[in-house]
Image (tube, rainbow, N blue to C red):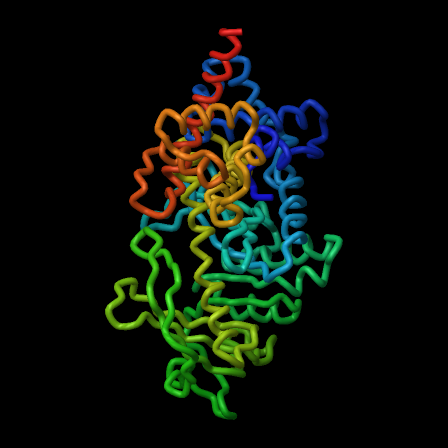
Length: 453
């Protein structure tokens, strides 16, 4: 069943059974999550309709010393694993960072320059199916502050966050019912920032498959000779005809045609600074370029543990990496949809648990948009509450629109957010705006029914 159940029940399911050290705090967590999910783009005073008691309850929740980001995410991590277990195909562990600048200055912010100063760095894993149609949830979430090792003593510097995230993901997966079997179906995906020799070595040693976009022109051993990776690309073997993939370019998702070639069994030589601690690692390489005439300027060099002995296998590697933009949509959802950078927190210890909850809300709204792809013919009555169905059907009749299945319902919700039908489906921002109006109008619809008896 798609991730489209009653909003209140669903979001509570992601934050139920928490162990915050106090039953009252556990109950308040459900209230806070429900309130945030019902109007994520609103200010917190607006979310609580000006109720001073409810407003204080939300702020006191995040100010409580017993609350932290990992406790907030306990249930969501478990639910994510369960959704992964119910899927039978390959699972992509998308990894990325999102730099968040609080509205008010706080002690402990990172200073990075080039527009990323005075921020915190959120780093997490988003688990999705290999075709990108199922977003299972966040599997790992961490927030880096200054100094880096204050919250995470095991980190030497920021680059170590990649290994720590991989390690925590492996721990969560191993603790599941399927354990090693589930891990064997997972692929760790990272962009160029994840091109760290230590990370590739860690993934290899722990038998977690990977696809990592290369950043460095590393020294490699090819046909028993050491050379630069860029210099041996001319020996790559072309694989299959050009085909279309969807990528995020110029801040929007585009479909472009790419061609690919491969290098098999390349040994990456350890960098000089770590050479004494490591031995060469054997990987395969998929080279991806856009065909002439395209405008996205795609040029990927993908390092992978996956066997690429035929064109179908290399195509799967490329298609899998092209799903990476899904995590960027969640980042965008947290910033633009939940407006995490506009919240008036002045203490990072209060802001960080809020971020954890906010990113789960952002994940869900991005996941909702995929419902049309997963099960568009699901009857509308199986995906919405009774009151929601009545409202949808009333609006559909008014605009002379069909209202039989999930696709019909989401398109109407998108219309509330300004969707014109110019594209195949509403973008997540339009869909989010539509959902906010939908929540409000259904509430008004129910109130009107009650008043009329």
